[in-house]
Image: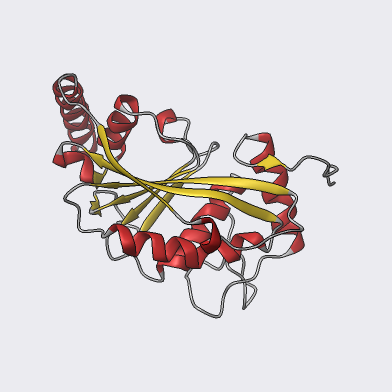
Length: 226
Ligand SMILES: [Zn+2]
């Protein structure tokens, strides 16, 4: 009974906030691009990835800290033959309730404002229970929340941020929630500095699925891989 009551309350809140959203404008007040010389060199890469990052004006996240962590995360992805073509951080001016991740409110934000996918969003906190440091939503786990497809939400203070960024991106690019128990693998359930590797099988799946889902593009002249 408690569960039923809570569910109807959630619908009421969702309805109220949806109605309120109409008058709110989401504005991009600043765009910072990671300088090309800070992107990892990946001459033998078969694919390119454009990363879109979003943070909020007045948030606890500092743009410079986000950029630093993303730059540190990128070499972990190039090991799969995926080069980073660009990484752009946009600062959004939004009503304060959007600074916090929750499925209904964050869906509302992404109905108001179209993000480029895959999108990494840096929020002040999460209302999810359990409250993960980061939450990755691919395609296969987005049926009930289609607006959130191919987005990753990082709560302020997320541990091992560069590793977390790379780990969650692998989940989204591969559209797969699997973890590894290999000692040095990036996809172990918890992050650690010694866990950075991806297997050939993980990289193959990442490239095939991400290309099929339009999240990476194959470089001209590169043949398809099995
Ligand atoms: Zn994971």
